[in-house]
Image 1 (cartoon, chains in turn green, purple):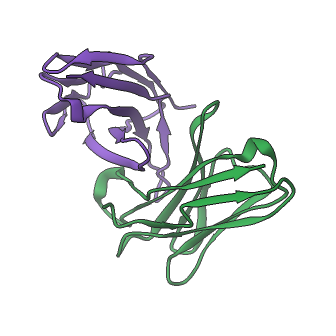
Image 2: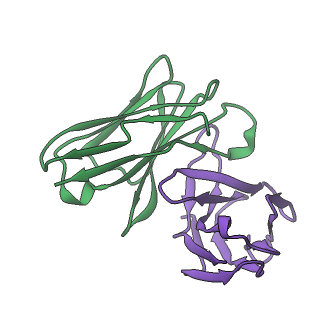
Image 3: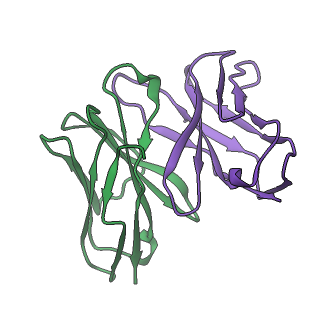
Length: 114
Length: 114
């Protein structure tokens, strides 16, 4: 158990809909990262938040957005969903200082768009 | 930009065989290097890490050495077990202040037969 929690575990929705994925980082970790894992694109970094502020952006679509709240949990919002958005979405967290870059991953949310 | 290249799988070995999974990287600076493992239906678990040249990361019988001259971080294990069957990801992280996203290789599926 990494200490990172994600809900829900599975999500099935239709094209055009909007969903919200939730992540709680390990106790004490200020950084939260979102990754997408799909068969054709592999594991891709989407976005990072650090203590409530956006710090880095990767291959995140404009239809996707995220935020980190004062209690440090994070939400990833996916809107106008398309079939190609079906994937595993992982959240990871890391310590604010030290730790030399290792990230700890949650169990993931499997999104299926039909 | 940064990139990670892993040997393509799948790899199938008999129990107690020697394992090598090749990983090479391209980075602009001096990254930290990681191996993550993903068991079926689960999230990614950190297996081992190395943060500077010639460092050797090790865990659960797995080892990898950070080779700056060959930009490589090959994963090895002397005697694999059935329980090692999983997907293995090589990754790097270059830090810029508090931004530390991971760049992953494509993953190598390992199956160990009894």
